Length: 616
Image (cartoon, rainbow, N blue to C red):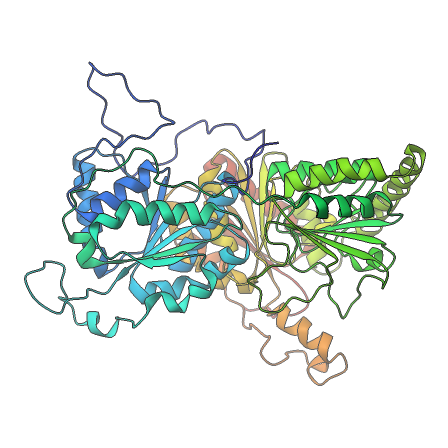
């Protein structure tokens, strides 16, 4: 079994290398002298001689495999700008700069790129104010265990003097923090302030190693301007000073106990949200589900472990099966059920599996746990089902259960899917999802930050669906889709958004990056002119209350709705609005052709009832 240590999301086996190179902003590497053989590409070598800490930082990023430096600059960037310009002139190997006009979107792009490649990327922002703008999506990355090297300048420490990087702008006094890292420390795996130029290699290598060690997550480094501008005289190593820690492995005794419970279960159930994070873990779930005839529920999935058509895939809500299950496997899932809606029966056994099965960084999480197996998902599940088979009943009994689960799976899909006939009288989210499904093929990746009706989707391969992070910080999808396209330029990327998440996603910044980096994406907005989550929560809490009787409930109305289709046109994209069900499919097909054939971004603003108030 492949090690999951450094690759949180493996690319699909059918993801071939891009037919054309990604857009390059930095100059290529200098060729080696003819008298020396060129070093192999897989082993980056230190061929430059940095004279400042900023030069060493940039060169080491590239040498350590960081391909992109997402950046939103400020006055603290001066040494970095000068170092990059020097590196370009001397043809050093440098990370490619991606300029993002909003920090929140930049983090989402790094998140999306890492989801596809498994390789953490870097981002640098402007001191504490830039850090503050990025916190929303850093929380998403933290809760999704996405490794990102996030860095920020620090206001110059010195007020005057001979140092060229001392304070020289009035904002340098107001922007200083007593503890800049404090505002996001709760969501970082590690943070540090660079204190001397000679620390550059140690700090960068430690940051990357910690970010990639399980459970993975973002790290934060602050970079004072004086330190970046200071002289650097150390010799850099060709290889990192440290590597990520080996992944955790399940305790053998606890694994044996879990295998005995699973093997003797009569009505087992597997619930997952992140089980499809890697190709290996998705395969392990499929192996276990098939071998032991275990129904699988993807609850609020961020990744798909099984095909939507798999005979062991039994839908998206665990509560119906949960009440009868005697053994429940919770696989890399932070919220396996909603206690107000249901829970396992009293004599059922609940087994949690994952790199951090108790989600220790969540302040409160009280789901029943009889066994918690700490380990990388793929090897833990493979060992579990092989051991459980020895405890399992006869092959005949397993086959009978497999048929029963397969029948339930087919019936669940048939009941949930409305298809595209008959056409509804008014636009609905279910109709939109059914039409979107007709756009998908094996070379399409769907990034979802709105309640896409997953029952209507046919997605047969892992790595083709990515859902919004569990923290629910809006503004993730637009940037994540651009990061996915950057990582997989030969794939078609469709981004499904709600009207609220589109506005949170900094659309003018996002469409700018799409045009500047030549990253054509199809954006589909489900526009009900509502904060649907706010309205649903109110209805669930007060189903017969005053707000439930109102057409425009307080705090949930987004009317008049902006003409989102106009925003993308400012960046050379195609935009149109649709409100009639019969016009939806032609509009989606037109937009997709523009993305595929013209290599331009496109947006379809789908006005959904109820909640949309038509404007002129």
